[in-house]
Amino acid sequence: MRKANPGTPELEDYLITKREFVCIAKPRTEVEAVALAYMLVLILMSMGLHHGKKTGWFGGPTAWKQHLADAERKCEDAFAVADRALETEDEGEDRDMLVRLRPFLFINWIQLILEQAKLRYRRTIREALELLRDRDALAAVRQFLADKSVPLASSLQRP
Image (cartoon, rainbow, N blue to C red):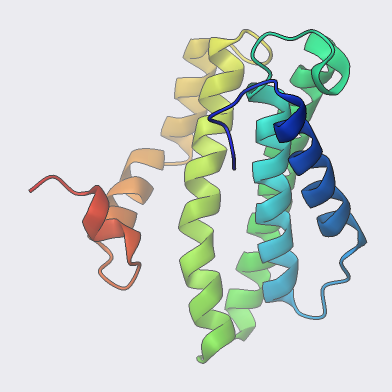
């Protein structure tokens, strides 16, 4: 996303265009559904976080809170679709794409949990950390970083 210019009309137009595209798209497969959900998560995160403290940005502070809650819910819905699809997909491009998308969804879900707690929108910091501990988030991130089949993993590791 173009977060370099928070709160600008250009970013707002960009997000509106992308959100319209994602919302009218009709996924034909579970992989497409997960990919579109991931795109919507990123758009909602930008709507809730990249406002530059401009109160008119996508409905203002009350709406920013809702955009982040919606993004978190969308992430969880996408996990469910991906997990169901992974149970039935034995091999091939669809399975590979789901395996690659799921860690990125999870990392964005972690960010959503922490951002909302930091901003005091949902959960306390303690509750957020407890949720991440319950979901074994650190182990999932370690696994993601160690997975050589996901191209980004090697670029995130320290030399």
